[in-house]
Length: 156
Image (cartoon, rainbow, N blue to C red; front, side):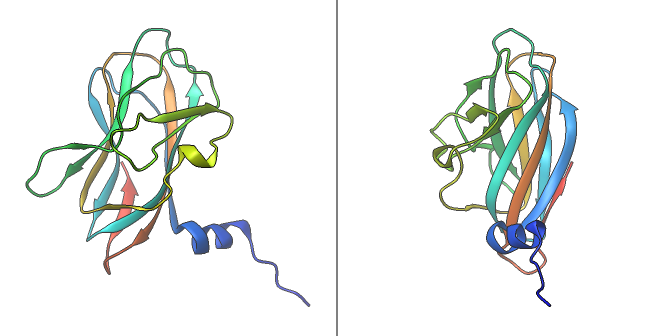
């Protein structure tokens, strides 16, 4: 008798723990919290958003940022991307280089549009920062490996 390894087991071995955030409307000319890191440092191995309701057709420069829980200013995880009129199925990610725009692609994300190496974050919040008030909804998924004992990530 053979034991089959399930997809979630393989993902956990390769990418770490998965945290899903239900689809939600975009923040309106503001930054809205997506995930909270607590208990210590984590390695973010993946961060993907998927449009579930078409984004309104008007300019909306959008980026992901990190707001540390301790002293320190909010930092960009990527540069802005105009998400105007993005269709259902458009996916978003970051490369891990803060100066590179948030990445997008319809229906799939090639390897050059996701982090090549894990991103280390200490306790704080990952935010979606929208420059305009657009209609539309995005669901987010994050994978991580705790770097410190007791470290975790939760959807907001």
